[in-house]
Length: 230
Image 1 (tube, one colour):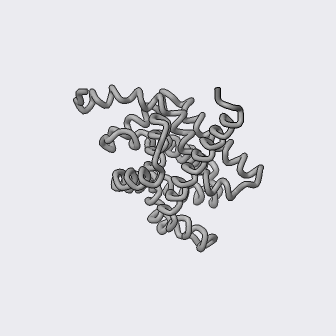
Image 2 (cartoon, rainbow, N blue to C red):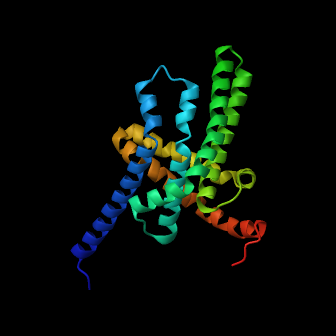
Image 3 (cartoon, rainbow, N blue to C red):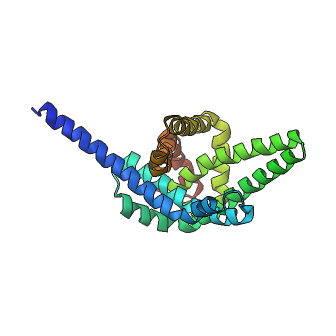
């Protein structure tokens, strides 16, 4: 029979390994989007939306990679952080760039329009832009996890995401609520450094955990769509 200290050591070891893995994949995520982050940091207050949009497309492949690794971690129980990150990043790079261009362009346009309408006092149109921006963000919460699991055409990806957003709005709301809670805890506890070092990887993992069953259920529909046989 294992001693209590042996069990405790095993638990501590597993927790330490898990924390290390989250840190490593989050580190590589930050490296991949570093031009975007550095531009915001050094040009704060003088940011050009067009330049920011160009840098923001780097978020696409980096986010897909985080969701891919999270899915592998959830389904297989283990990952090789650095090796899996670069393998999946390379695999998803071009799709991620394309998705990043589409989603970030929509978000950038809606945000700029919201700011413009707000500056001229048109609260009604500003609110419409805000609501549309929220819809795009909620769509992206499905788009990135789906494309991290399945190699499908862009049009079909957006169709699936819109369908899930309508049919399973509670999942999107759960993900949004979770993100708000995590960010609020980071702000309240003033552990911003921990948020930077672990935030993105943990949030993507939790989103994938919430959506994993739903994404698995798409398997048969996608097989039928593309006439794939086991």
